Length: 77
Image 1 (spheres, rainbow, N blue to C red):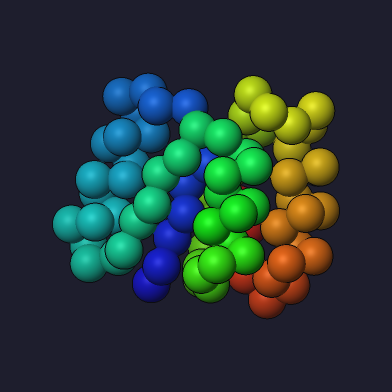
Image 2: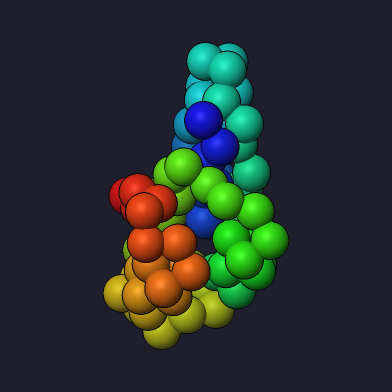
């Protein structure tokens, strides 16, 4: 499964990414919503896990709306 994590780098998020990689998933992490949106336009992801406090969007709903417009079938948590 291809997973994008959109969250600022913290030990907790790094641990989640490491755990997912150990389970065999391909994981990309990024702390900027606009970078995740750009990556989504280039590559498809099966799942996006997003923190609700991403610095370059006003709120998580804005990020959700943009991601769903690019990839309506991608699950977002």
